Image (cartoon, rainbow, N blue to C red; front, side, top):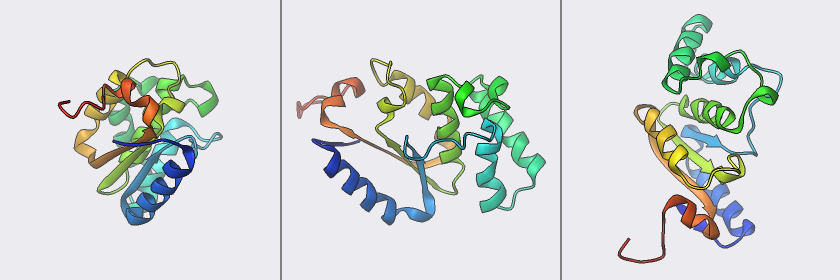
Length: 156
């Protein structure tokens, strides 16, 4: 986790990190929303179809299996405006995890999941796809530390 006092520092660090990890970067961010005129399934299948040349049906089957990990197969054909915040986040996370050797960046995840009090949902979602991800980095503001269960206490 990387915490920053302000937006300027966070944005600069995120830009440097993204440049250094470009071939493997999977971004979960309001700056990289789901494509609104595509279904959740089509948003996610774009990655394996175009980056791995995976046939459409094979990619769709994979995505339905992955959505099943979240008990979200029912949202596969929904579009972004019809999703809850949690469904949207999971769709974005799965899309990010589809990048080969994915270095997933959660960019201020509480800006997507505004109503959550803590990081429990984040940790559980990441656990469900940990086999697909090489690395996870969270970029957020220092005042959000408590939501992640992080303190400034060096003993913690």
